[in-house]
Length: 270
Image (cartoon, rainbow, N blue to C red; front, side):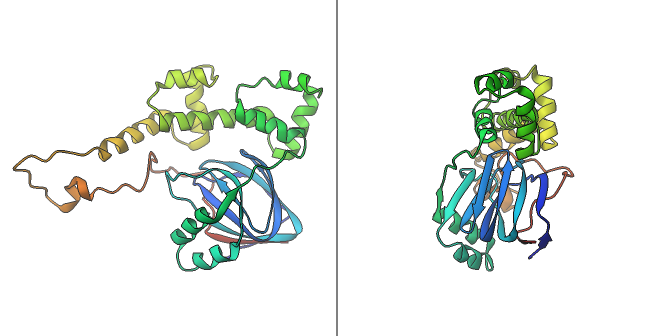
C-alpha cells in the first residue's frame, strides 16, 4: 500500500515492531533513539522494536519502502548503504520476506559522523545511560540550559528524557537476554530501585518486566526437547516436539499500543 504524506516533518513517534526504512528516492533527516541520520536514496535505517524518532523532509520529499523485520532476528540497528534499492523494491512486490532477506544480504553498515554537539551527546548517552549531564556540559564548555534547549531542538525531547529511554531499552534487552535478577539489572543500569525500572520498562513497552521475563522463560521451556515415554500417544501432531515451531522470541501478545507499526510501503512527498 502506497501512502502519500504531504508534510515537512513527522513528529516524534514510536513503533512497537522492528522495521527497515529503505529510501528509494529523495531524502530526509531522522533523529531518534539511535542518533541522527541524514538519509538519501540507497540508504536504509534499521529500527529495533520500541524505537522513537522524528523525521524532517526536504522540499522534494522522499519515497520510502518500509519492511517489517523478523521478531528475534539478528541485525545491527542504524544506517546502512544499499547499492541497488530498486531490486529490493521489485522483490517486495512479490514477497516481503524475500525482500527482507535480500536487504540483509546487500547492505553495508555505516557509522555517521556527528554533525554537532547534540549528536556527540546522544552518542555518549547511548554508550553510558548513567552519564551526568551537568558534568558533560561543564567538560564541553556548554551552559546546562543551552544543552537542554539545543538537544531538544534536534531530537524533540530533553537529554534527560532521551537518557531515560536509553536506560529503559537497555533494561528490556537484559530482561530478555539474561537470567539476571531484576533487582540486579536495575542496580547495574542506575535505576533508583527495581520499582523505578518496572515503571520505565512498562512506560516504554506497555508491559512490565515480570511479564517479559515470564514470556521468555515460557518460550525457552517450550524449545527444550522432551523425551517421549514408550507408550506415549499424542492427541495430534502438534503435540509432538518435532512439530513445535516458534516464530517469536520473548514477545508477549501486545496490548493496545500508542500507535501502530508502519505499513509495508509508504510514499512521502511535499
